[in-house]
Image 1: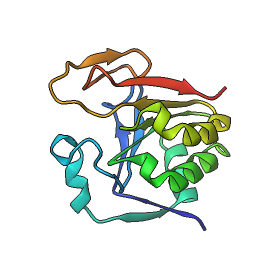
Image 2: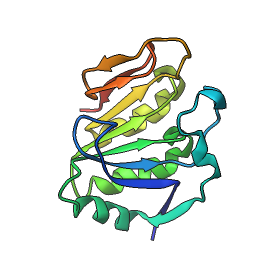
Image 3: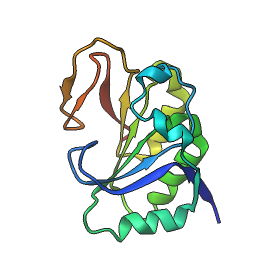
Length: 157
């Protein structure tokens, strides 16, 4: 029985991707953007939730509303082993899109991207929040991103 540690689950999220999604809030972050700029900073004080990965996958699969999974944070890439195991397990059930919101730049997490590529159908939103920049619409995600430097990219095949 493999488990994943998260801070919260939103079974039906209509904000972070262009289709209804299950959103997972990951528990770790290096605070590289600065805690004053983190929209999810309050999660640090929330208790950790440990949940069986198979149970989480079944919860997603059996929800007729959600069509994708969004992984955000704090910072999913700071919990990479659990993130990877979750996506790898989910791929046994479906090929639905998995979106990962990260504050890292591509070059900072290249080894993680390389490991995720074979799991296909993954979109990564890259880039730290930078105060004072303009929000802009991201065509891949179908939502507004907070800073000019942020963008998304489909990885894998």
